[in-house]
Length: 244
Ligand code: HEC
Image 1 (cartoon, rainbow, N blue to C red):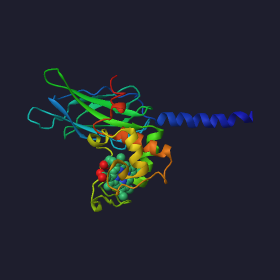
Image 2 (image 1 turned 30 degrees about the vertical axis):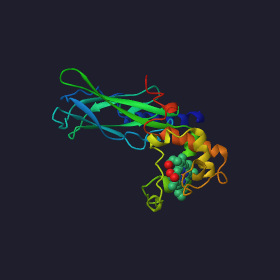
Image 3 (image 1 turned 30 degrees about the horizontal axis):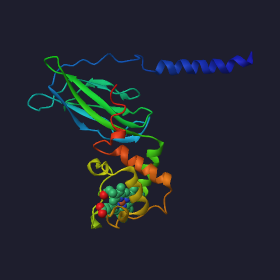
Image 4 (image 1 turned 90 degrees about the vertical axis):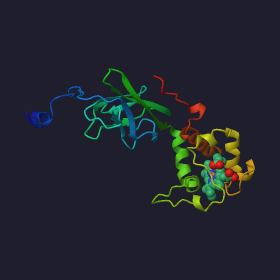
């Protein structure tokens, strides 16, 4: 019976591996030992990631008492619309009053509103809402084109890979997140200024024409990206997946 020797070897290996695994499948639900009166964002809001992926940074929240002092030992629970998951979904604030979770966005492009809540002493719920943005295929292309062609002028911040040209410009362009300005420009006008340059909208020629460099679908991808990152949100990309 030669054939059985290998499976038995594999079986004992499998048993050894199983024995090494930590036993409890899910830890007991965390219990709060303290209560705050408010929950605030420390970091991690307004991040941008591809739909269906995990945000680059964790979302960190802090529980405070009436005096604004951090509260350790308070229970925080994260919730989100369908498709969003949290690791871990709930837990207890640490000695600095903070709790953090890694957040994976749903598979659909859009703006996701997530909620972090904590129970107050008087058994009320204190809530914090944080928006995160999931890019679809077209917007991911738009983001790539933005990195390649636009951000050196439209993003005032320099990175190690790219020195911003913003400070050298006599007329200042806007960040594409500046919804107060960008939301007022129609899709047609965005198409015109990106294709034909600033003068197409009676603006400065410092905004170059891209109609020769980029295809119309590239420019549409850029517009789609500009719309989804805008803050306040562009109507068509409102809190679409937030309500549930
Ligand atoms: C060389 C610098 C430069 C580059 C590169 C550049 N822009 Fe601009 N852009 C400008 C300037 C300057 C303005 C402001 C013009 C004005 O207000 O008169 C502007 C204006 C705009 C506007 C109108 C809204 C605003 O910011 O005032 C849009 C939309 C725009 N650019 C899109 C793009 C896109 C998309 C790209 C990349 C494909 C791009 N720009 C690349 C300099 C640039």
